[in-house]
Amino acid sequence: LQFNTDTVYSLEASYTGDKTFIKSAQHFGSSDILFYVRHLGNTLFFANSCTLYFQSEQLHKAMFTALVGNKPDFVSLLLENGVSLRDFLQKETLCDLYKLLPNCLFLRRLAKRASTSQNLSRSPFKMHPRTNPERDLFLWAIIHNNKELAEIFWEECQDCMAAALAASKILKKLAEEGHDADEGEEMIKLAKHYEKRAMDVFSECYSCDEERAQKLLVRVSPFWGRTTCLRMALEADTQKFVAQSGVQVGHCVNSYVQISRTNSNSGLLFLCPRCWTMETPADFGCGFFSMQAKPLNGWMRLVSLYSSPQVKFYMNIVSYFGFLALFAVVLIVDFQPAPSGSEILLYIWIFSLVCEEIRQAKMYINDLWNILDVLSIVLFIIGLGFRLDDTLFYAGKIVLCIDFMVFCLRLMAIFTISRTLGPKIIIVKRMMLDMFFFMFLLSIWVVAYGVAKQGILIHNEDRLGWILRGAVYEPYLTIFGDVPKNIDNTEFDISACSMNGSDPLKPKCPVLNEDEMPAFPEWLTIIMLCVYLLFANILLLNLLIAIFNFTFQEVQDNTDRIWKFQRYELIKEYHSRPAAPPPFILLSHLYMFLRSVLLRRPASPITHFSE
Image 1 (spheres, one colour):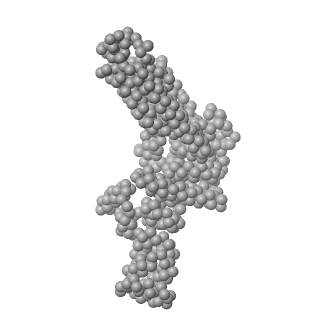
Image 2 (cartoon, helix red, strand yellow):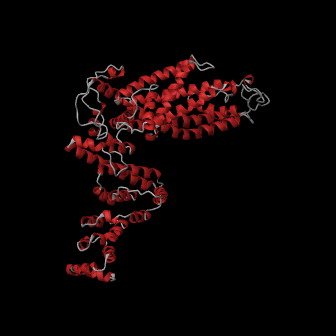
Image 3 (cartoon, one colour):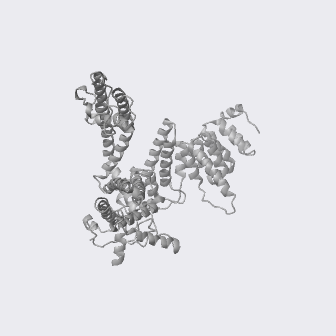
């Protein structure tokens, strides 16, 4: 049965005619419903009447058309009137929905994964994934950057807080990889919207039942990669969510530490605490803490104490200071052609640090501290290789001295636990990034002035070291007040330079006139210097100060939120860390190796934080 547009419009005149049309179309199938929905546009009165007379499977094509045509009102109406998403969203349907999305980097990656999945599906074993049509349609709407449809399916999701955090992470990643600035801004805006949604859900749960809300944070979600809301919040960089009082003050961050409040930080630092706790480590069913409290015996108190992130942190601080002291002694006092006992101990210590970095590789986060860790280890390996070669012995010591500086910079990470100094570390990191991009702008002026000055003063200099010195190094020092003297004829000394550049320790003399004085135009070089200092020393450096001031103010306005997020990251790192500090951590690694590889026993349930 085919209907034309005139027939549809004539039905708007009477409700009786509409019912007659629906009953007639009911005998012919969903194609007529699809025609009906398309031609009625957003006339919800007729669509509502239509959905009352048809079964769920007859409305699947209408649902598909409403999704593709961006009709959120029709989608809501179809869901309210019995459309089953589990029956509607088959594998082929989901693939068709993704095929209609605009081409982007994500879709190319998705197509590659789909091809791999098809190859796996031909293998003899069968996979039975846990289907969740609400989640799949929600992700489709998020990737489509459709706020209205995403909101509909988010409300249908079983784990709405995890869904909101996942959406925030996905949208931020898509905004980074996209090339459309306007679309990227919309994605960032939608990501912030779902971060706020997650915060609202947790706040509502926390106001009703604090304990159950805290369990919800660390509950493993089977539909979102078997991860937890806490871990997802960290990966999505949702600082506002992590900084909520319910997350920070509750059991999720503080109670599981299992240390009595009467213990001071100095007592923990010198390992003289009162071993008292009311938390039992036997039950970690909700993630990493137990809601059942009872006194522990003396041995279990010690185990709980030295397994707590706070004690691990302090012991690792003491260990790291000892490591730096040993490193300094080896470099300054005891660096012999044949490795001494202290140097061998240093090698063992470094090896324990390498083992710990390998253990953390699966939960690595690309930040400054991990970059410094990798850089310090790589430099040490290079320096050790040079040091063991007699011809490169001194070069190896130089590399190890530079490596010592990197290890000292890594020491700044201990200040992240401080409420005062922690945000300042973030300020330093952001200022370093600002300065990195500022150096590109400054280098234009440095190279422009340096090359012009070098070309005017010196004729045909062929020594690379002196070329770089005159074209880059001296103009850079000029910014800090080291005004060059070779542009002033009154201070020219012919004995301080080499006429033909044959002396490697002296610069080449400028072109001389018949009076054996520099022939270059002195007035021009002075004007060039004044203009260079005006732009580089006054304009650009003040611009850098303004950038630093903006960065400082931006971080300072969110000090509390940033510190809480940093503290959570630090607790997460040290919760999964073995109790013994380096170099004794090698014993812990040996135990874990024997347990997992030789004894075939699963890892401890408290090994990973919030997983």
